[in-house]
Length: 435
Image (cartoon, rainbow, N blue to C red; front, top):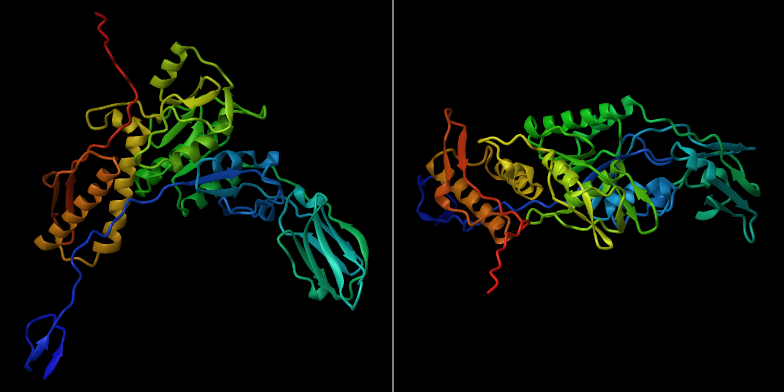
């Protein structure tokens, strides 16, 4: 007897033809958040590329610096709330180097940190191998054994070259490392690279107006033309756009460090990226801050809020966010004040990002554009919105509010979807009657 599976019921031989299919279950999920893109000028590390930093990363291997060094202040601020920081070193320089007899030691990356590198070669205590130690700023970071230069293995900090036997040396100290100033071209390279990366929020810790305007144009193009729902955090701007958050003031940390509004963009970017779609940052604390750098009067706070500024206020011995808003202020009948609130914008951005991903991964080119196929996609959208409802990001979805229909061409689909994002409680109006 014949058997197998079938596509159409046109088999010639007698037999059992059986197909096994899965019961329908939603394919899409709510995307994760938490990634920040942070351009920095640092004195060591790869240039012109994104370096992924997480809580498990040994930053000394990348930047040649302690995680507590002043040069990595912005990284520390961003990492307080972000799950992942993509650091982009903006400018390079010259790599430190030193040739001594037949061995050359060169810093792996350009920058002045290379000038703090030294290599010691210790005479063999037993056998034929010497001990070679690499130091950064007096701290040993690598040790290996070899008898010839060719056997040396380059490490995270230096590159060895040369030929011949190793001879003892008290310290091959590198020199000539330099840091270049960040130029317009470096920023242009950064924005070109940023277009290829995946992240939620970009920090822009600069007071250069021209660079900030470049960033605003970049984010508008990414959101409107490319469908990439990112935000950028700048300081002291009023571009009237939901994709831009503008920090109005800075803070003072518990160790006395003053964080300027430009530097605070790193923390706000980390806070924004790390905030879930069902979370508002209104009245959230600035971790480690004990005071605001500029105390504002109530009238000044209101004026800045009306101008779409993101600002910090003092609350006891803590610093909190006054309101989690962006710079959008030009409300209209088509674009209301919901676009001004970053919590509701995160919901809308998640819907835009996730529905696109669901469609491209599971429906584009795979599902027939007929009544059954569109009904399946409608159920998918309803299931996705239900996920958002269950985490209190949107009000309960109604299937009738989702309309999926054929477009003007046989391969196009039109979706009309009504959704109501949930905002956080922010204003309490209470009347107390005293009897």
